[in-house]
Image (cartoon, rainbow, N blue to C red):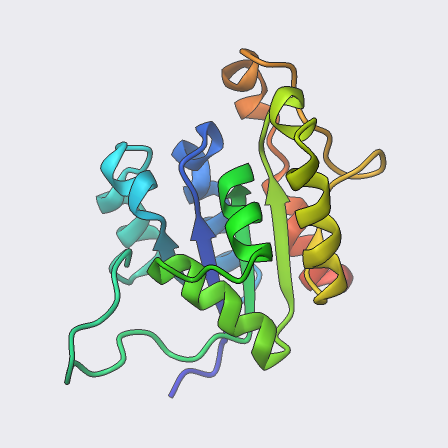
Length: 182
């Protein structure tokens, strides 16, 4: 049994996903044992350097449910970070859709009362859809700390995501989980 706190990092298919290793290394430095769970789109779209993430976390990156009869592959989470969170993930999660391993884990985390932090990455065009803001409100109402709004994380102009990738504030999610470590 691990003496570390266990952090599940749920990573979606958005530009900053290419840099999620920064979050994994920072979390490890802060004493977390990290388990990376990637959306299928993040894996299939080759947003991730799987060998580098597995080296940084010391665990395989997971994206699919375990097989019937297969032992659990990760220790239970103490907290969850969803970053980068796409509009699609926010909307499906808020609607209670758990049709992927990543969505199933975040839905369960809320039900278990775990600390969950979500750090969005979407454009102002996607942000203007009424479902997006409704989903953010729903997730916040369920206890998820969504780092979204004037004081935290604002959407970017369409077509500028790659320019904003380097400034994606991975540390904010960990700061929320461990404010004394700032």
